[in-house]
Structures are given as structure tokens and as C-alpha cells.
Figure 1: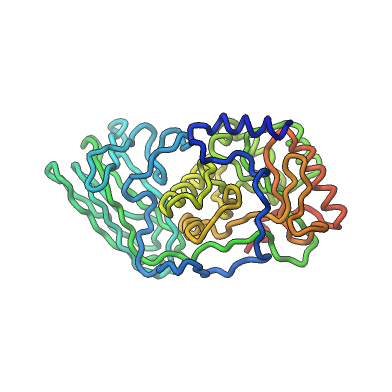
Figure 2: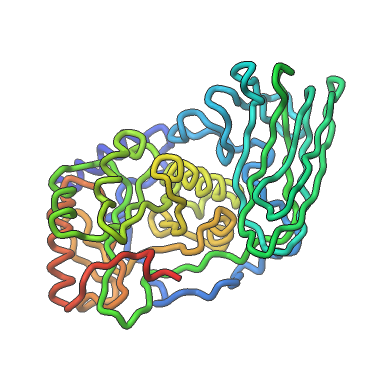
Length: 387
């Protein structure tokens, strides 16, 4: 009964997303995956990384989701209340429209994208307005922006290029206007160059240490009993909260990840099955959740948990483009009163246990800890073991 009540509550919270969104991961069948990490650089779909557009939501065509970050544009970070999507586009059906909030704001929008070191990239965008700037920071070298004093009421393409430094793994793209010069529009952003290697997928962490890893997803129920259990037993927890529950009670997730070795990681914005989405939509889901986690918790995720354990080759590439190097499922499920080890038998060193923030979490944690003790294992910090 508690399991069904949890599912109903989650379903109510995400009902605007439509009937295709599943609710409780524990209802999904076990996923059988090979043990161990796929090697970096594996490209099972044969995707050509030679020259691609790495920008997230480059044409501003991806709709703002009901659970997106309080009305923001997927994949982009703009000043509060300054950015909207307009139908007056250079191409397609949408473009970015920015109106600076006041004289002290240039109306900047930006995003972070993973890149290869010692590599040349070309950045371009179509803009409409006065004193519009396009550029990149964090490249490892000084890069002058491309800009225009006026587009004379039409669309104009701005283009610049840069070569990344030897230690550069990500850059920050930006668009902005200028002080007291009014608003601007932008469309068809391109960051052209080779993509980074796809993320590696795993359901465990190969190690000879007698350790196990506790992970907890979603965040719809935030019970003090679970928080006390984690603190009392000093359990390192890897949490994968969604942005909406993070926004409701960020202090709770900071509390349950206070034990050394704990961390907050990425679980998408809307908890949709990513295999039903385009590569561009997948990248927007993952990058947007990364940005929200970074803003709320002050650390940048490096691990991605796909909802329902559903992922494909596009997911691995999208995760890598967002700076996430590992796509993690699990070898055991102790959610909602379950005690399921997918390959049977006792837990083994390096196993990953999935649980959920539900009203049964305290009992689930006790059962998972008992199972770890029975196998002679101790809970450890996941990030410490992922290299």
C-alpha cells in the first residue's frame, strides 16, 4: 500500500508531463547489464565525432517543461526574468528573446559544454539587435568575442573561433547585449568541432575492496527518520534528486549527503525515459539538471543516473557533452521494501544499490545495511571509487 501511495503522489506531481511518463522505478523490470565499465571512447552507434554542433538546445526549439527550472529555457542559464522564447526566429519556430532587467544588466545567457583539449572550435550564432556579443570563456586562451553594433532590424551571423588549452575540458558559451541598449534576439547557435568521448556505462564499480555503494533517487518523500538513520550510521550516500524536490527542500538533500564520501549527482529534469527523446532533448535534460544541482548544492555532478535505467548511445554522448563521465544503473534494488540483487545471491564488492526517497526509506536503508553486513561489505563513497 505504501508503495502505491508513493507512486500516486509522484504521479500527481508530474502529471503535466503526460501519460508516457512512468512513475515508480521499482515497478520496472530488472535491467541485465554487463559488469564493469565500458571503456571511454566506445561509440556503439557509430556516431561521427569529427564535426558536430555541441551546443545545447541551439535553436531554442525544445519546449520549457512543466518541471523545468522555474520557467528557464532548457540548456541555457539567463538572468531571472530576462529571457523568453519568441516565434520571431531566424529559422525554425523559436528563438531566444532577451530583455535586460535594468541598466546594470547586459542580459547575458550562457551554457557550459564539454570539449577536447588542444582542439579548435568554431562558435557562431544569428542575432538581431544592437550591441550583441557572442563568445566563450574558460577556453585556456584569451578569446575576443564576436559582436555587432547593429543588425539594422534584420538577422546577422556572428562567428568566432578558439583553440582549447592543454588542460581544458569544458568552456562557457555566452550571448549578451550591452547596457542601456535594449533587448536582443538570438537563434541557431553552433559550437562546431569534435565531441568528447561518450560516457561509460556501468551497473557496478569493479574493485577488490569489500565495499558497496548506496544510491537514492528522486526525492518526493523527505523523511526525518531516513536522515537520522544516515547520520547515526554515518552512511556515505550518493543522491540523485530531481530539480523539483531539490527546490522544495534543498537543506534536506544537503543533510543526507553530509557524511564524507557522499555527493549529489544528476538525474535529469523531468524523469522521462530518455530513449524516447531525441539526442538534443536528452542533452537538454541532462545539462539543465547539472546546472540546477551546481547552483543549489555548489558542486558539479560527474555521474548520471538515467530514469528507469533506460539509456542508449545518444544518452552516453549527451551525458559526456554535459561533463558527466559515468552513466550509472545498479546491481541491486532495495526500494519500497524490496531486497533484490539482480544477479542473485549476496551483494558483492563494488555493487551499487538503488533506493528511493520514499516513506519506506529508513527501513530500506536498514535492510540494505543488513545485506551489506551479511556479505562482509561496508558502504563507501561512490565518487572516491569512480576514476
